[in-house]
Length: 442
Image (cartoon, rainbow, N blue to C red; front, side, top):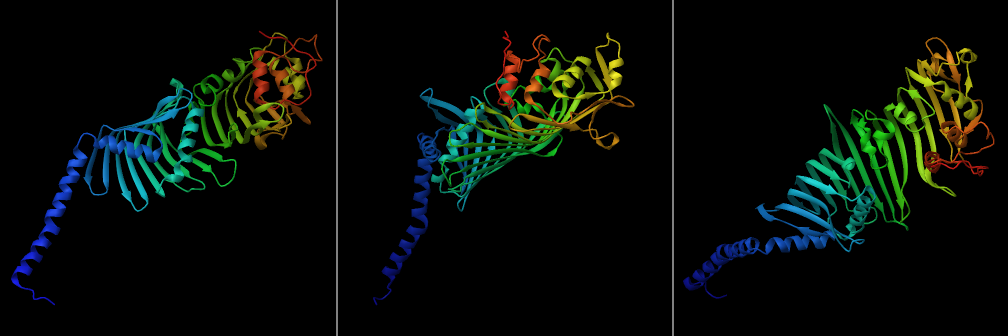
């Protein structure tokens, strides 16, 4: 052992001071120079882009405290193969990031999401989940006070609030769960979205579920990605329930719905598309189960549906009642035959129908008016039944003929062919027997 003389002690003290003061100060100075030079935000954007597989642009980067980063002016772009270019998919005014042990927390302000269409938006999300296996994080949480969603058309623009999401980076089945509120006038509805990409087997299976959790029913416009809700259901219609979508490989999406359609304008649904008939009332349609899937020989359509329709009071056209009797085998009360020939409409107190449609096009119908009337009663006035459900089953072909009356001189016609009837037969499971004749429509 060498003696710890004064020069040695001075050298040790000097070394300790160098390590504890000069080196950290130099490191801080170098770090400060590096993060404040003009090219730093571009380096950060490039690194984030490599992790996400996207092009990322930033207006600025700040480090307010250890383990926390604030990004401003964030823009995400994804490659668009059809255009051989880039398309913007998201932006935020500010994103605050906090990193933990294999966990990331994001707080976004001014969040906006973009998609050229609902289908392309789902493809973009699927591509992001496909790359999620390369991320070293196990869990990412996101919070945003508001989020604007633009799916390419004016009717497909939404604003949601109180967004809270969790991304579980499971290599076999990465999952996104998002809770949010949709505000409408004086109320809001809490909803949940769950998206999973199951890579445990081939082909890959993607599933998406939308569910209303609490609060008032949603305006039916949330269904606009699938059809024009106002045109079909009326401007006051509302919806609540669960919509589940599934895609296997590159096949088209299948869907299941369970829930309620409220304040459905039957005049908009019936009179606007089937001008030969009249039905005026607001209805509640309870869907116990409905499935959209591929039907061999026909393509994708609603292959199964089960539920009830209830409405009243209202008015119904006598022509519609007679068509229900002749084409769908509904049984009418004898008192209807006593009505004067000039009478065209009939007032009713309540209408209730329970229905079940199978994938072979068969439709089973029953009464849906509760215990006050016999089980097969479907239509009543103030005091007595006006119509009864069929004895036995009807079918989709009869439904189409009922909605699109044909000339009495052609009683053997199987299915009338018009643009409107063709649309209906493309979304319902028409029985397999071919039509014998066709009426050419404009």
